[in-house]
Image (cartoon, rainbow, N blue to C red; front, side):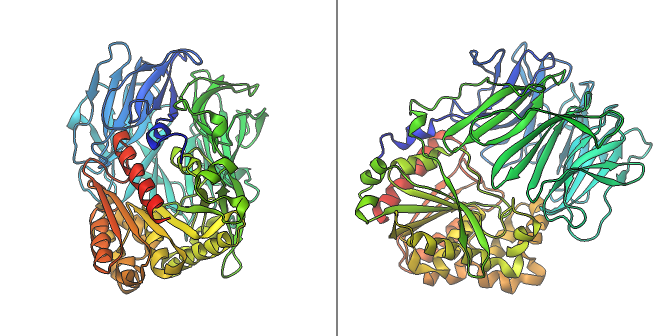
Length: 616
């Protein structure tokens, strides 16, 4: 048995999402000390933090004004993802709802440089599309000015340095976007198209150059399979490579548009490599580099520069390192931990690290993954001592997306199960991001089940592993990963001792019919359309193959899920139980796409642990 119960592990805290105040003397960040992420502030490294928001719902971001002691944060209700924007006066503590339209989503677009206005996109006018709005800092609700009516999924990448224009992104899929400039001073604001192209091309993480005439972005335009950092000259339309990923994705860039200082991240086999530097004011593709900061854990992101760009805040995490915020001297690379997110009294040295492995799939494709084994004492506690040749049970935890990637960041749930004596395997099957556009496209539409076959290959590899008990392998996954669990149970029923489906897709047809209107077009680009691919979608939906399931099944879902509606859980649980499968179902009335509240997470993972102990 575990040395600590699940509640203890779920009380391991995370501090992230940092933002420097306008004078550089305060840092805001998000931390889940109260059970949901709230806004906290600090005035010095490892100082006593002050909690600024006190809600039962999670805060999703917080951003300081560049000029005043105030910040804007986002929060939805019950996991419905219809985020509202709030302003917190850091001096008085007064909080005001700036949007107050609970039926609409609001997607943050940033403060103007003078701090007088902020921008966002919202689907107020039509639930299926996002328009661009600009609002004065002291206005409320419907006072926001609709500056551009969109016709799809629009988001904002920030104001130009002179506050006259907005950088707008339109997404057609996760692997195809366009960039535009919206001139706010034009008599009739319209979009200037920056990235005309044929086929699927990614244009992401866009930032204005300091002179306001160029754009830095990451893209795979041309013959590139992975993302590289480029400079786009607005006047000529020329795109020049600045930093090549050398076969790996450049994930993004954070840029201070006053000084030209930047932090660029590269994803190498799931680990973060940072380039810190400063662009030449006269030659935008030339830059000076500074020493790379020495940060623990191996996974870093979420950069915020202080007002002079002499320092930047960044969050860092790892298998054995819970997430905290560090402040880095840009020129020297010296890093200092600022936040003190606790580990609930669990010694960090007891956390187990993963190994990067590769598994050959049915067609010779190499599938990467992270395997973590419990230490010998934990394996013995599980009742299956690997040294005796019996092996330990293993949880195959499949990420969602599908265009996502499992990386070696901290997971209290994983550490809990490792402490209970389970091994943990996290595959990045075909369709995962992080390994190039070609790899990510290998599961598109009619190739969907090839990714499930990758799971079969991974399990066969695990069955041959000397530390693993081949008869005690469980599948677990959330969202699209929940579909993968259900599909693995229907396609390869003899491999599994149990399955855990969290907010998963059981029926692609009903999922696409009932998902949020604003998401449908993007999801059809990945899975196939109801108009053209309905028969295929029905064929591969686990709900239509449920008679093949042999392993006990646990289905968990949030009642308010706008992405994968709760009906997906209801129908698979009912039909599987009707086939005689041992089924347990757990629905949370105050959650959405996943579980954000501590008490619900405790209940959910306690129940999952009991379920796996019983059947695995």
